[in-house]
Length: 477
Image 1 (cartoon, rainbow, N blue to C red):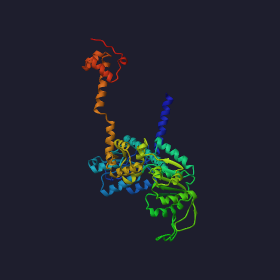
Image 2: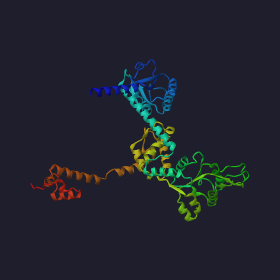
Image 3: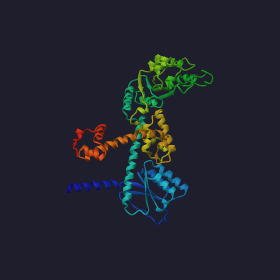
Image 4: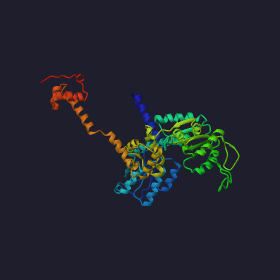
C-alpha cells in the first residue's frame, strides 16, 4: 500500500511538473488606476503578460498559445472591434475573460463574453486561484481537441472524399482497384453525388498522377464550342481564331481527361471522340497534323446511357469504349451514417469564412439533417450548411437556420409514440404490476384493477401475458 501511495504521489508530481511548461497569454487591459486587481499568477502556468494589443499581437505571433486570459472592461466600439478581430485570429487559442463584476449589467458586454470566450471570472482573482487553474486546464484540453480535429479535417481534405458507411467503403475499394488499371472509366450517379471527386481520386492514385487532370462539362458548352474546346484549333481556322488554341484533350496529355455529363455530347462529336479513343490521335480544327496523345479518359453522367443507346441519342460503340470500367456513386440518402460526418466536415470547412462564432449543431438540427431525403445530394448539403452559417444568430445551428424545419418535424413525428401506443403500454404495465402485487393471484389482481376475472384473462391474452409464465394461483376468495 505504501509503495502504491508513493507511486501515486510521483505520478502526480510528474503531471504537475509537465504542467509547469504550459504557457498562456495574459492580456491585461485594465487601467493602472483600477483598484480591484493587481497582476496574479496561476500555479503550473507561465503567464506572458501584455498590457496593450500591439505587444499581445507580437507575443501571439511568436507563440502558439493554447490558452489566453483577457482582463478588461467595457470599451468603445472601435476598441471592441479590434479586440474581436484579434481574438478571432488564434484559431486554436481558447480565451477566458476576467472582468469587473459590474460589467455584467451591460447586455452588449455579456453578449461579447458569450460569443467569444470559453468562460469568464469576475474580479478580484485571489492568489493561487484553484478554480481559474482548473478552468485553464479544461481550456487547454479543448484547444488540443481543436488541433486534433483540424489535423483530421486536413487529412480528409487531402483525400477530397469523406465517408465511413459500408457503401462508401465499397466505393473506396473500387476506386483503388480502378486506379491501378489504365483503361477508360464510366462513372454514373445522380447530380451532386461527387462524380468529379471520384474521378480526381482515381487520377491521384493512378500511374498518371504526376500529369494534369483536365475537366470539361459537356453539357455546359454550346454545341458550336465543344469541338474547339476538346480538340483545339489552328490560327485562321474560323473567323475570330487569331491564334492557335490547345484543346482540352491535348492539354491533358500525360494525365487524365474528365468528361462530365458525357450523355449531353452531340452525336457528331461522339464520332470524333470515338475516333480519338480508337486511334489515340487528334487533329486541331483547321490543321492536318496528327498529334499522338497519351491520356486516360474518365467520363461521367447522371443519365441512363443504356437507355440513351436504345433511344438513338448515344452511340452504342462509344458507350462500350467508355464503359470498360464502371463505378456507381451512391446517393447521399443511401450512405448510412455519413450525413452527420459530412455535415461536420463542411461546417469546419466553411465556418471561418462565414460565421466563426457558431460552434456546431443542435441535436434537432442533426436530426433534421439525417431525416432529410437530400434530392440534391452532397451539392445540396454544401449549400444548406453555408446558408445556415450565414443565417445563424445562435451559438449552435438550428433546423430553421438549415431551412429544414419540416424535416425535423417529420423525424420527431416518427419518433414520438401515438396515443394508442401510450395507452397500450400503460395498460400492459398496469396488468403486470397488479398481478405481481397480488402475488400472481388472478382474482385479487382483477379486484385491484376493478375488472372481472374473465376480462383480466382477455387482457392478458391481448398483451401476450402467459399465466403459466406467471405461476398463477387462481384461488377464489
